[in-house]
Length: 163
Image (cartoon, rainbow, N blue to C red; front, side, top):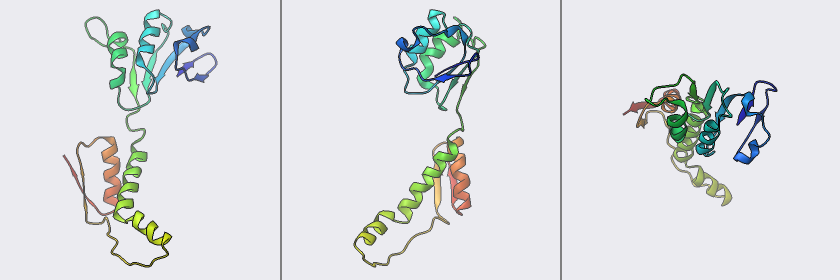
């Protein structure tokens, strides 16, 4: 994605040909959204066309796919930071993913598939529906997503363990 200061426009770009005729010198910020191939950024950077970029942002929290761009374009020959800010989307999706975790926890705990089958069969077959209160939710790692999920788990009265 390319954003220029001049017209405040945002455009998705997935091939180098798309840049033909573009004034890339007016680009001040780069937004990397996977699955775009980061080698395209490396090629553009080394062409000198992005000389006015003042900020690079990765839409996702993980910047591992950007490693070729980082090492080739954002670090000097000694491996030191060249001063251009690289930011990421850490925490941007934590609440959404935490809600999805609880969507799954409730789906399986409340046996939603079984309830749907009974409804389709027009059958009354009582069974015990378990509650999440008092259960344990364990996390391998305790980053932003896990912390957001743990808050919901606590609200459900669950015990939280982080490894």
